[in-house]
Length: 388
Image (cartoon, rainbow, N blue to C red; front, side, top):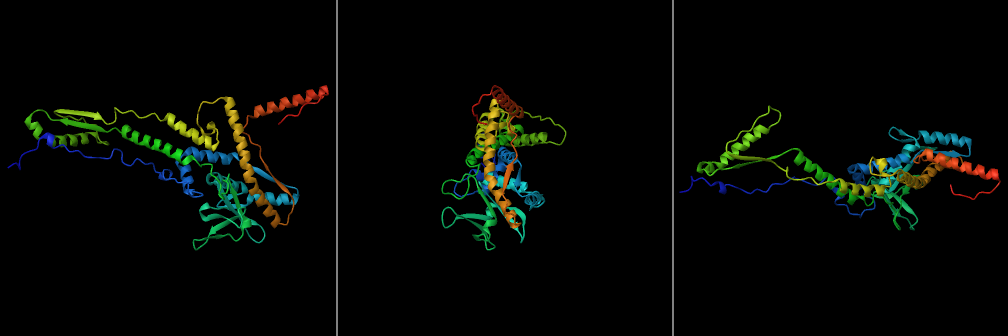
C-alpha cells in the first residue's frame, strides 16, 4: 500500500489565487456612479470638494475675492439704522453681520448652482439671516413658467409651499433654458475628478507595495533524494526563520540557510508610471472650469508676466459677474429692513474695488492719461474720446 509514501516535490506544489492589492477603489465611489438625473446632487458636489483639494481651494478663494460692500442710503437716519443692522445681524451660531451670510450664500451658489436663505423676523424687524440647506427645499413651477414655488419639508416629511415666500432669498446661477435650478460651477468635473482620484489611489497602492518592501524567498531542492523528500518541511522552516529575521522592534538578525535559497524583492523590477503629465492635464481641465489662475492655487506652471496679468483681468470680470448675481439678494434684505422700519428712501450697494491688477501699472496708466489731458489743454485742442 502507498499510504506512507511521500509525495514528490513536483507533486506538492499548489496554485492559489490571491488578491494582488485588495480593494483598488478610492473612497469617493459616488463620483464613479454619477448619473446626471437629479436637479441638484448635494452629496456629489460636497464630496467633490472634499475629494479634490484644488476644487475646494478654488471655491474658497472665489468667496474671499468677492470682496466687501457697503450700502449707502439717501436718508441719514435710515443710513445709521441700516449700517448697524448689517454689521450686527445674527447669522447663526457665533457669526454676525451680513458679510458672513453673503459668504455662505455665495459658496452654496457656486457649489450647488442654487442658493436659498431666509429672513427671520418678529413683529418689528429682521432678527436673523438663515442659510437654508437645499436638502430641505424643493423648487417647482407655479401657475406659469415665470413663477417659482418654494416648497419646504414639513413635519410629516412632505414638501409644502412656504407660508411667507416674501421672506425667502433665492438665487440661481446660469440656469438652463426651461430649468428652475441653477448650474453648479462644478458641472462637468465628476468624471475628470474620478480619473484623477484613480491615479492618486493607484499611486498610493504602488508606493505601499514598493515602498514597504516585500520579499520572495524561494527554496530549490537539490537532486538529492532526501532533500526532495523533505522539501515541504524545509520550505516551512525557511519561511519561519525568515519571518523571525524580518520582525521589527527587536535586534537585527541575520538569516542563514543551507541549500539553494534565493531572495528577491517583490516589485523591484517594475517601474512606477510617471503621473506628472496626466495629473497636470486633469488639473488643467479643473482649473479651466473654475476660472481661477493657476498661480492663485499654488500651481507653479510656466507662465509669463503678461499672461498672469491677462488671467487676473479675466478673473476680475468673473468676480464682477458674481457680484451682479449677489446684489439683488442684498437689495432685498435692505429693502425689507427699511420697509419694516418705515423708511422709503432709495439706497445702493457699493462694492469695494478689486485689487487683482498690478497697482503700479494702474497708477502708470492714470499718469499717462493725466499727461495726455494736460497736453491737449495746453495746445487748446480737442482730444478724441477713449474708453476707460
